[in-house]
Image (cartoon, rainbow, N blue to C red; front, side, top):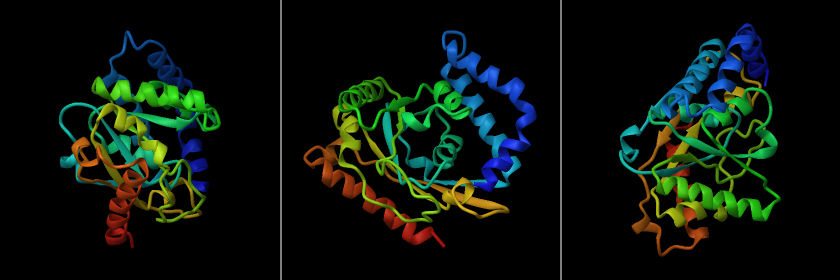
Length: 238
């Protein structure tokens, strides 16, 4: 948490320029390409990484499908999780995020730039709409980050909790590849009392293709993805 405040203060002088720029590009997607908006997000993440002494190593990028849409399902450790993935993910991707946490300054601009989906957790009808919208986007070739744990505990270290089965409905509807993503030490960045240099890890695992999971129940898919992520964390987490 101290690092988060420190990073904000270190970059505060940029706010009068960068926040209006982020809002302008997100409000006018007809003027700015998806790649341009995504690169602006990555630029902001790089500034945060440099000022916060954060280094992120990516493994398994060769596992990412080169064509078509897919959904990445990472474990959830804190505020830096999505930033670490976006920074190491070359092609533009989007995210499904809790609406209640998506409207603070900078977070709102990030979500708007990548045209993320805001999920109202207690609104079943809206959740169905989001599931369908994400599925349609993925069918059209878009890539998403979706956290199946739904949330995280402060300073939860590298613990993985149960995955929510409903998180996988969009992938099933789209018949899309499921990409498990193992995050290691991501919690240390903004969700712990750790200070000093930090190295986090993003492991992109081999995709689970539709043919592999089409006959499985959502609960079985959730367990499969969780187990694959847990295996990587058990090997690489210190």
